[in-house]
Image (cartoon, rainbow, N blue to C red; front, side, top):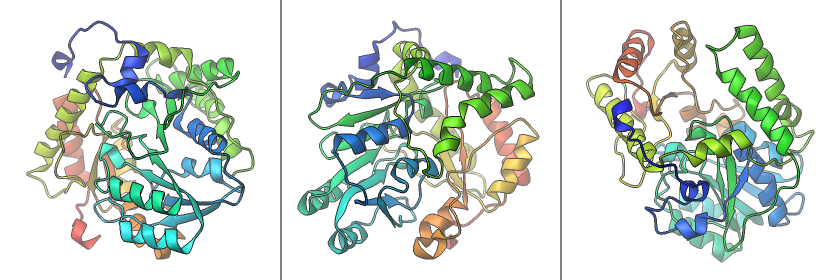
Length: 361
């Protein structure tokens, strides 16, 4: 993959986020940079002055850390997703009519944008509801700024940085996050140490990981609220030198290579078509034995991920989201992933994985 990455002059941080190729670059200059995506949610809560016990609609299929900023303060209601990861507007409309909803929170999964965003935005405006879009997976996809009241980003899921998130508000200048720069830099360094598995012993990496995750552990159950912190100096510097255009092209190229490798197998991708406006975050595949396969591949120093196994209590209320969370595995997409790496993963997938028919899911 290295021959695809061209040597280009560094872009400014503002241009990195604004992506000049898109018509909405002027609006995205107003992104407030945070340590992580989860730090952006409390800023949105503060910005819109949400009252405690306000009703928030969340998709059942989500990362648990998204719930933390809302926990024990707001009335959370969950809606199911469709098998193709879309949102049923009729379900949302019914919930908006039934409850005094303040925020509709939606997630653009794996970089793929919801096609009915305009309808969702219209419903929100009709009912006086705020629309918050989670672009943690789709920061480089060609999305529109015409619908959301707030957009949340997690740049570390797209760029090679230890940390980095952001929040965008419609018609609002970037917010100032007072203090926290030293803590951000320390956390960023510890995350970097944890990921540098060839640089030090496993024991030291694990210790750094425990220290870096203390802030998450203390807030996981909502006992302590997340204190928003700014992006670290390290990540800010790295992102100034990122070639956004090449990153966009490389990720799409790797997605298409995964697609080609799977075409002759029994394994089915979640997304069979790659729209022109999408920069994929990962390549999710339907599979029967996700957790078992994860464990097998660790023996070969291959660390794949399951997005996101849900608790059994969600099974009855949101069956599609629950089933999806237990039946997909995400193949990696990142600059530097070689064809031989992908072929090795495919060989192990064929040896240890059990295909699943998505129609039966």
